[in-house]
Image 1 (cartoon, rainbow, N blue to C red):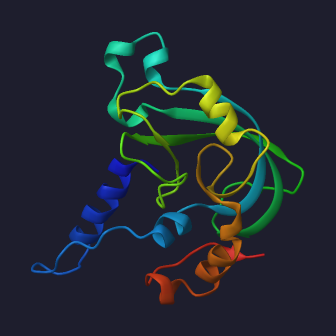
Image 2: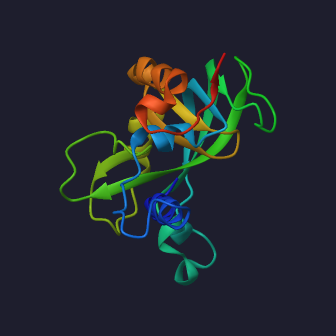
Length: 180
C-alpha cells in the first residue's frame, strides 16, 4: 500500500463516520497489516526494480509508482487469510508480487512501519540494483497482501501479526485475516 493510499484510507474513514468534528486518525501499522487478504512469512529469492521511470514512458510516470519492486517469494508459513480472500496461498508456493520501497535522506531504519523497506536516499532517487538485492534476496519477511501485491514487515513481527489477527479490536477496532 502506498502512502497516498494510506492517506486515502484515513480520508475514507473520515467520510464514513468518524464524526463531522472528529479529527483524522493516522492509519496504524495494524490497519495496514490487516488490509491484506493473507498474512504470511516467506523468503525473497529474487527482486526486480519496477520503478515506472525505467519503463517506456518515464515522463508519464506517476509518483505513486516510483520505487516499485517485484519480489519473487517462496511462501514458508501461511499465518492467516480472510474468508473472502480470492485464491489460496500454500507453503512451498512461489509467487511474484509487487511491493514498494521508501527513500528519504533522513532515513535511519530498515522498515517504514507502514509495510515497506526504507532506504537512505533522495526521495526522487532510482534505487541501485545492488541495494535492492542486498536488502531483499535471501531474507525472510512477514508479508500482508495477496499473490499480486504485498506489504513487507520484519520476519520477527510474527507474534505482533498473530496478536493483530486474534485481537484486531484491541489493536485498532477493525477486522483482520483469520488465523490458520
